[in-house]
Length: 403
Image 1 (cartoon, rainbow, N blue to C red):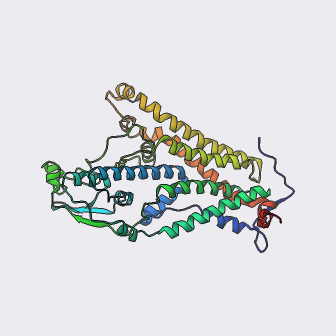
Image 2 (cartoon, helix red, strand yellow; image 1 turned 45 degrees about the vertical axis):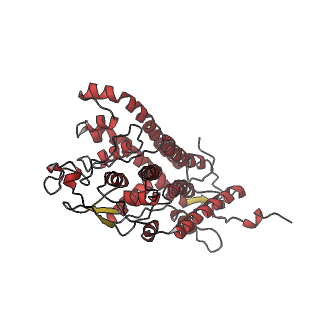
Image 3 (cartoon, rainbow, N blue to C red; image 1 turned 120 degrees about the vertical axis):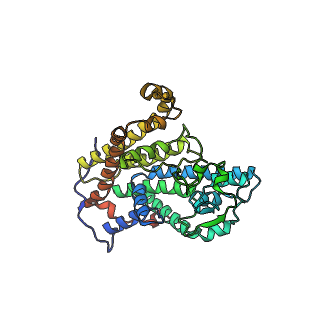
């Protein structure tokens, strides 16, 4: 049942802000907190902006995955006797910031796991790269991140004060609070990660790729380019049956690139179930909870908001349930459907015919995106008719103790 909406104090249309909080103030204060991720090339910027808008909770899980991977890298190098390798080095390497130049191949980037492999076998000396060198290539210093966190904290404080004062909320503010929640988690996991460094560091490697790969001519890229990313693609972990992110990328790629694309590189460490489940639970919990205290122009739009949020939440619940069930049934599905011995359910999904992959994944991916678009569109459309209390500013002096 939709919450009762009083039409007596509703304000319709654009509200200017000479003396009150206007429509423009709500838009600016909300949209500036929906952070767009910056990437090196314009196409990547646009793609990751869309990704941050439609899948902010997945971005949190991806950041957690990278953080766990970087921490594991520091433990690996400490075991090898290199305690000077820090989490910043691991992040920088995993971003493609470290490039090796072998004598028999073109320079190519290496991640932290590949560097550990080369250093452990004496193929490469530990890159002479200090923490200060990495800091100097970071386009966003601690002050910039501190300012951003202060802006988000002030926005949350303002919303809390509005609730304590009995003032109204709009749906755009509820959506913004959900994005701030995800951004705060992402900031924690990416605290030591450089933001889009402009330069790469190239290190010469005396050992050839031919020798590293055991003298196989197929390993030399000039003779037979059999790799997907770099000549060291063979240095990667096996699929993790507990992975929460790999199935998402596989399904998204199957729908958006059904003809196939480059293989998604597997991370060394996958985020725990709680990381993804908690972020999504809090994200949609805010949408559902604030729907009861926010104002909607009509009951139909309230039901659309709640229905779209419920669809997204239901699809997430199915996703989280399908991973352990699929992992348990993987050997049986592999034998029955394709006659193979599968150890990871992505191996079963990869064995599907090309026409079947988008057919299986499209209802889930497109349903999730359509429901998210409905919530985002309603967040803006609801500004056309809001209660008068939404445009009232907080009286901060009322929170001061009276002497």
